Image (tube, rainbow, N blue to C red):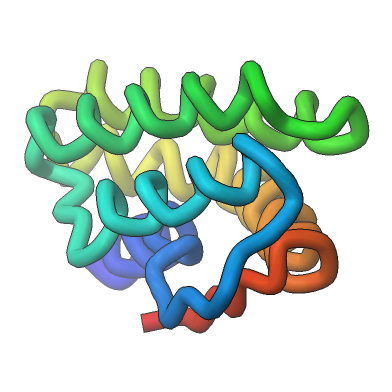
Amino acid sequence: MRKVAALAAVVTMSVGVLTACSGGDYCAELKSYAEAVKGLDIKDSGAVDKMRGEAKKLSKSAPDDLKDDWKVVLDYSEKAKDAGGDQTKLAELAKNDGEKIGKASEAIAKHAKDTCKVSIENS
């Protein structure tokens, strides 16, 4: 269960306090993404779909140096959706992809803060 909670924390890493955002469409879209993941329950496939939709938009408008990170987020969210809320599958996903999604999320959060002036805090 702790792994599932850790997995949910990694996915919701983008939840946080947003401050003024400048820097074009990508920065503006970060706010929508943050709203989509706010309080995200990884077992809720509808919520995961909403988050995936926002992540897809961001992956298209993201700077080149973040494209791979957004691909990791999208791949992870697809696997989480496929798990269908199954605790065992989600725990296995956390075990297999936790480090990779963590690094991608950190890179996205750092860029959000440095470039878009979006402060992302863990919830």
